[in-house]
Image (cartoon, rainbow, N blue to C red; front, side):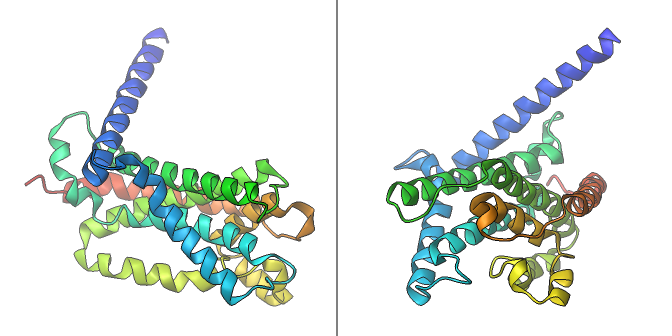
Length: 264
């Protein structure tokens, strides 16, 4: 038993070092050391989010169904930024990182995990900065339920991680599939929950909307932000089942795609 625990601890330590090293490598290759360097991890999603918030606020100053437009955009576009970054970065990631597999201890899961950690950290930091600045300026209110808000954020990350693994495997086997990822992401926008809250929909439309696990992420996130001032609808059991199934499919896909990765 003690040998098994020792082997498990050693394996976990190796895995952690691999992912940490790969994450630092990706940061250096992507942003370099010049100028603000690593700060772009935060500034990139930050600038996009602020730009969208300004445009939406000018177009619709009155808000939606009693929800201030700035807060509606804040709770919609920031989770969307997390989703898009974590589902876009895995596209053909194994093909681009194939030379790393010459190192015996580096696996496909290490490569994928390192990149996803960077995207998650950058998007999370961007959210904290945007909300902190707006809250200090008195533009937005405080967070009613931080526990639910964090839960919704991690739900989005979990779902994006599972879908990202599937995307990484599919785009490795088919270069044509790369061309369809971004169009599908745009097609998903109207039904993802970013532009509406479930309670605004007719009852029959609510049932259809809640079939999409993305909607549960947005509803949970907004339930944490607005609290009881805005009615929300989400089912954590349904979401967990969907996320677990997608995670299993994603892990299996990454494992099986290893034979398709060419090292040269």
